[in-house]
Image (cartoon, rainbow, N blue to C red; front, top):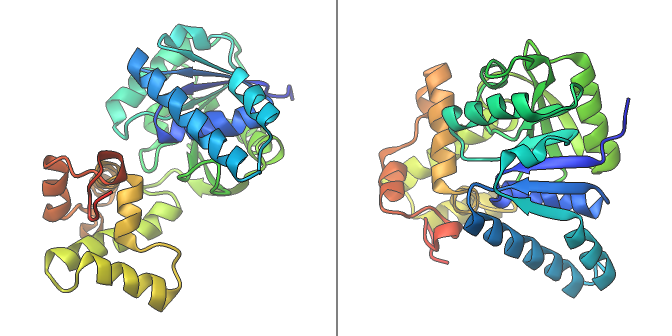
Length: 285
């Protein structure tokens, strides 16, 4: 099994840049394909800020910071990913754009053994794989935010995913990137979100019904249950639009009402209240 040392990332948002960071810090050659030049610029600045924080905390030397930045190349052309051995798709949580990306990657990646991975939170891996001519090399690799900090990765194989793809992916995540892995079936929400989403939606409904304020809901779960972060603060961190998209995807498959985004969540999204990334969600930032 050939070692993976050339990595590609599609998407320059929080998840994509976080993945690029851990790969660069592991000494890998990383190429990030962004949708637009301004997205690439934002991603580059995000990476620099993250590495600067590590330097300030004395968890990373200035020379290692420079080395990591030097290993990351930025592009706006998916064709530049042609020589990559492992490509992670990390774009908006909608099926059609992801399928289009996988179809393109399937055409341009030259290595037949290359892994095509998605960090989707909930979408079926089989549907992504079916957009390609070779679904056996398509796999779900669900990182958690922030990627450089959170140790867990869910690895999701579809019915078509080859065992070699699973083995290569798991080895790369654990041995090269130092992550811990749990295996999940290709079903709505996988493991973590299948448990987490009903809890988050219940917290929104509690605020919607004025049972309790956002602050008191979060204080109840942090002080009463020992959670490191309350559910509404977590929604703000992940992004209200992302949480709603995951809920809608899960509801489409399960028809379970607990997965459906409450009206309050949808109206906040309509108003541009997306959480930390927009400066306002259930809290102001």
